[in-house]
Each structure stands twice: as C-alpha cells, then as structure tokens.
Image 1: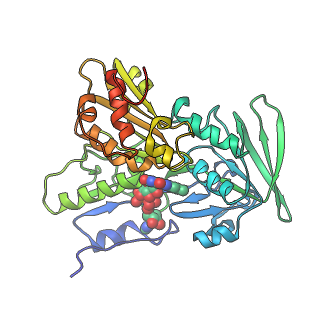
Image 2: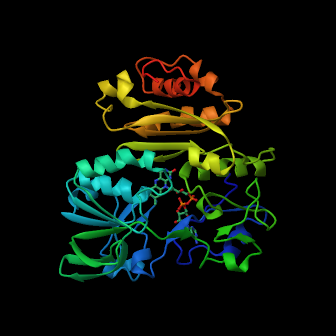
Length: 375
Ligand SMILES: Cc1cc2nc3c(=O)[nH]c(=O)nc-3n(C[C@H](O)[C@H](O)[C@H](O)COP(=O)(O)OP(=O)(O)OC[C@H]3O[C@@H](n4cnc5c(N)ncnc54)[C@H](O)[C@@H]3O)c2cc1C
C-alpha cells in the first residue's frame, strides 16, 4: 500500500497547497528546489537540474522560448561554433569547459574579478591555466547588458572592467546566473511558513514553522547540493517514521566538475583566519604523486591542501584541485566529520599508487615531514 504521494511538476500550478493537505493531513515535505528568473536577460538561469538549456537570450522572455537539450546525444549534435557563457561560477565553468572540449569557441562574461568566486586564487589557478591553454576567453569584471538576435546570430552586449562597451557575436548564449529558491506561484505564500531571507526557514530537523510541514533541499538554503538535499530527505523520512534524527553535519563536501576538478570541505585558510583560528597548512602537489604522473595528471598545477588548527592539529578544512580529485571527496568529508587530526591522516597507511597518498602527504607536510617533497 502506498502511504505517500508525490506531487511533481513545474511551477505553473500543477501543485496546489490544498491538494497536498487533502492527500496528507499529517506530514508534508516541501522540496521545490530553485527556479530561474526569466525576467531579465542577464539574470536568466538557463541551466536547470540535469537538463542543459541553451537559449538565445534575446528570446528569453518566457519559458516557451527556452530550447532544452535533454541528453548528451542531443548536446553533441547541437555543439555551437561560438558560445558565450554568462557567469563563471561552477555551473558556467563546468558546462563551458565541456563545450570547449566538444570543439566550441567559448567566451565567458563574469561580473566579479575572478572565476569561481567561492574559492581562493590558489584553488582556481589550475582552472585558469586550463582555460588559457585551451584558448578560452574570460572577461572578468564584465557585465552582460543585453542581446539581440538576427537570423542565427546573437549579439551579446557587455561592459568591460574599465566601463567600455563591447559586442560579441555568438551562435548560442548560456546564461548560468539567476537561480533563486522556488517559493512563489504555487501556494507557499498562503501557508504559515516563516522565511529566512529568500529561503524557507527550518530548524535542525528541517521542520518549518508550520506543524508537520517540512522543507528540504535548495529551498532551505546553502549549500545547494544534491547530496545535501538527499541527506535531509532521508533524515525527514526517518523522523516521520519515529526515529530521533537531526541534521548536523560538521561540513558538506562540494565538488566542482571542471578540468581539473575542485573539491572543498570545511574552512579555507582565509575562512579559518576570519573565524580567529590560528592554523597550520599542509600542501602536497600532484606533481609529486606517482599515480598522478602515471595518469598524466601531474602537470595541471593540482594539489591537496589541509587546514588544521595550530593548537591541537584538528583538521578544519581540506581542499584539492586536480584531475579526478572528486573521488577523494568521501575521504576528505569523513576526516572532517570524524574530527581527524593531522597525525590520524598521516598515520593511516594509504594505498600505493593512488591519488589518496597525496592526502596523507599533505597531512605529513602540515606536520613538517612530507616524504616525497622537500620542505
Ligand atoms: C547545471 C547544474 C549542475 C549541478 N551540478 C551539481 C553537482 O554536480 N552536484 C550537486 O550536488 N549538485 C549539483 N547541482 C545542484 C543540484 O541539482 C541541486 O542542489 C539539487 O537538485 C537540489 O535538489 P532539490 O530536490 O532541492 O531541488 P530540485 O532537484 O530542483 O527538485 C525540485 C523539484 O520540484 C519540482 N517542483 C517545482 N515546483 C513544483 C510545484 N509547484 N509542484 C510540484 N513540483 C514542483 C521541480 O519540477 C523539481 O522536480 C547542480 C545544479 C545545476 C543547475
């Protein structure tokens, strides 16, 4: 017997709050994610979930104008000769790099003065190296202002960092900015649910201010990641089933699937400093990892960096950049979650030859005696 119902659809009104209440007078979980803002050209988010959407932004006045590419086959058929990507955050870079690999000429327009603004410049340097090597143009401090389409060509207008206006012609434009929580147009306004800024306010069990109404995923705030949404969903299901649970991770790892990849969990050295924590930093380059060299992944500038408290060597952050480093994210998250100290990692025998040895070596570097690099 099914004892739950799923109301799924888009934001055009398939879901109405009273429908859910009628079906489920006891518990309801809100998980409507984010949606793109299609009102302003430069704020349109053309990428949604696992559907890749590419549009001529001059046509982006409503959802019907959005052309969706639903599978990788379709993407390959539709590779544009010249692609302008608005926004050099993780979504823009992941997709822009993928299109460059498929042969497109790719040009980024980014309003801030660095790519991937959530990472420090040490982390983003290997990505910048890749973009340069593959002749991807990145306009930093540049703001997209609008676009016009004539025939099959779209002209994007932007202002550069010195305030000078420019125009670029492109076959397609990928707009990766403007994701916002999906809190309007489906009945949330009529519910007694408190908000916290643009997000639904929840406690550490994902309870909203309304009895037996729960909210999880992107709609409750950062980090907007699939594995966080899943973990919250599992927790709420268990609480509804009568178990005692709370959502209290020490940290949640995030991966940027660029080339090379970036993994981050916990605090960066700058963030630790901002929190008044005195730190030890241990860093180990993949250029000194036998496995990375064997995989031709030792020359992309990648490394593992551990940030630990100076007083007791408890690790507060682990960051890595390099080919395939996403596969290390589980070990990094586990170390932080278990409250590992540098000597716990350094004292764990890591398999040779694997990339994980770089993690142990970075802990050894933090302790002042890495084996495969000199001080
Ligand atoms: C291009 C891109 C790449 C990403 N890559 C990663 C990644 O590599 N790793 C990662 O962890 N995260 C990634 N994310 C983020 C990840 O997709 C989200 O964090 C995750 O999907 C959030 O899950 P959610 O269930 O909160 O929302 P969603 O997955 O957005 O699900 C919301 C669902 O609610 C439905 N819905 C909306 N309104 C209504 C309504 N009124 N009635 C009924 N149903 C409704 C929607 O149709 C949708 O199915 C990426 C996001 C994008 C856009």
